[in-house]
Image (tube, rainbow, N blue to C red):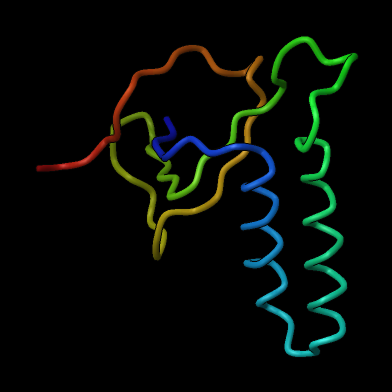
Length: 98
């Protein structure tokens, strides 16, 4: 299971670009990669005439749980992208202890 905050595809690629590029010490390389991955989000700027429904779901602060319900370790919530056709169910809200 995956739990997280739903975001749009454009925001996903902007965040992905920034996080991915931050791992490169060389500024030129980081800038090039950042622009490349941000450009992938441009498909979300305008509705596509040939796309009738969303194909992917995007989450920020995602946490992954194994079948026993235990959260898999991560330092903080992650970005997650999955195919809508692979989603078997969903609920509104987050897995979290009060």
